[in-house]
Length: 121
Image (cartoon, rainbow, N blue to C red):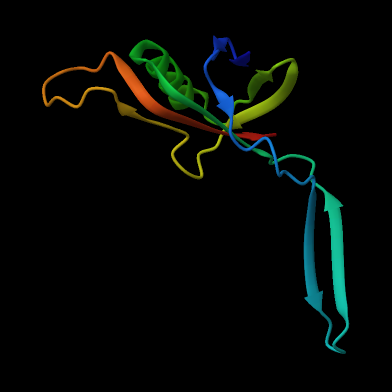
């Protein structure tokens, strides 16, 4: 079970769980041509992307409202008992989805392809 702050997300999956490295590296060449490489452990900044094939409009609006009101305020993200301190990743659109029904005058009952972008702090 995934819980974002107080919002339960039972149908969401963690897309980028695999392939993460906790290290960051920079390299440069000195004036004499020697290479200097620095490696350090990341203290924060892990990207977490959650995805659901489809959810109710009420859940999507609750998530969208959360993203639009939290700003830089951190909150807990619990993924199967592992708790991360996160903020919404505003470098790109932090939440997106596609209305399940695309009628010009109709409000959708559901939203498909919901993507949530967070970052650890």
